[in-house]
Amino acid sequence: AHQWRGVLREYADRLDVTDATPVVTLGEGGTPLLPAPALSERTGARVFVKYEGMNPTGSFKDRGMTMAISKAVEHGAKAVICASTGNTSASAAAYATHAGITAAVLVPEGKIAMGKLSQAIAHNAELLQVQGNFDDCLDIARDLAANYPVHLVNSVNNDRIEGQKTAAFEVVEVLEDAPDFHFIPVGNAGNYTAYTRGYREELERGISTKLPRMFGFQAAGSAPIVRGEVVSHPDTIASAIRIGNPASWKLALEAREATDGYFGAIDDDAILAAHRILSREVGIFVEPASAISVAGLLERSEAGAVPRGATVVLTVTGHGLKDPQWALRGPDGVEASPTVVPVDVDEIAGVLGLGRS
Ligand code: F0G
Picture 1 (cartoon, rainbow, N blue to C red):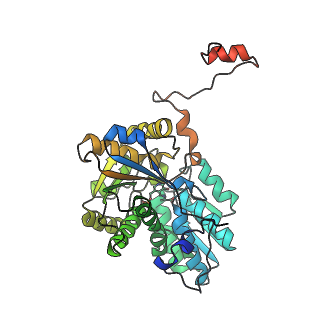
Picture 2 (picture 1 turned 90 degrees about the vertical axis):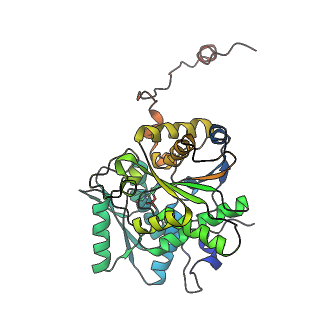
Picture 3 (picture 1 turned 180 degrees about the vertical axis):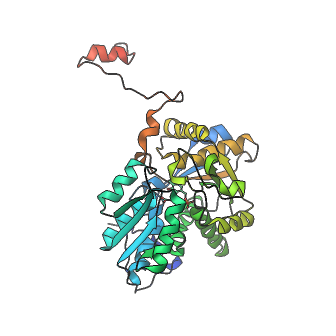
C-alpha cells in the first residue's frame, strides 16, 4: 500500500537531497487544500485553505525541519539549536529525537503556548526559557551556532526555506495553476519567502502560468515590516508571530516586490474574530497566528483589493490544539462554561430545545 513519504522523498528532484542524505522524516507535507465556502461567500473570491496544522507536529515547520535535520545529520551534526516562539522548537525536538541527535531550544520565558511547550518537553529537548523575547533568543542561538558545535535550524538556515517551499508545489498541483493571491501570516517572514520561492520555481518550470500576489500579515503590535522599523517590545496574543526583528526581512521585501505583494497589520481583536469565523463557519481549528490569514483576507476584501472570482489561498500555519485557550473565550471576552446536566434524557432534551418526534 502507498502512503505519503514526506516532502524529501516526494520532491527529491526539487530539493538538494542525494544518496548521501539520510532522510529524517515523520511524514510531513501532503496537507489538505480545502475549499472554504463560508469565506468565498463573504468575499466573492474562490477561497481555499492550506491546512498546515495537519503536519506531524501540528505546524508548517515540519516541512523545513525534515530538510534542516536531514542535512544537519548528513554533515555530521550531533546537536541542533533553535530559537522559537514554540512551533519551531516543537518540530526541532521531534525531528532531532527521531534522528537520534540532541535539540537545544531557546524560548521566551512565559511567552509560548502550553501545547508547544509540552511538545518540546515530550520529545526530550534541552529546553531553556530565556528571560527575554524571541529576538533575543535568535541572537543567542546564532551566536552559539557560530562559536560552538551546534547546528542552527532556524529559518536563517536555507535548508528550512527549501523544505517549506514544497507547500507551494502542493497548492499548484491541486489547483493546476498558481492562485491569484496567497495570504499568509508573517513572523520572521521565512514562510512568506519560502512560498514565493516555490511559486517562482513552478513558474520557471512551466508548471504554472503566473505568480500569486503574496499578501503577508503581521500582528499590529508586532509589525516591523509594515512599519519599516524594528519593534523592540513586540506584543500580540498571537504568540507565534510576536517578533520585532524578522530574520528574513530583506528577502521578504524582495518577494513582495517580485509578486506585486503586500504587507498589512491586523489588530488582536480582528485576529480573534477571524479565528471564530474559521472555527465556527469553516470547521478548521487553528492557533491565533494562523487566523491572521483569514483576517487579512477579510480586511483586504473589504478594502476592495480582492476582485470577485479571484482564486485565493490562505495558509493556516498551526493547529488550534497547540493554543486552545482562545476558543474558550467568547467575543465579549467571557469564558465559555458548558452547561451541566443530570443523567436524565428528558431534561437534556429540554436543555437542547428538542420536542419529542
Ligand atoms: N504561524 C505560526 C503558527 C508560526 O509558528 C510562525 C512562526 C509563523 C506563522 C510565521 O512564520 O516566521 O516564517 O514568518 N513561528 C516561529 C517559531 C517563529 O519559532 O515557531 P515565519
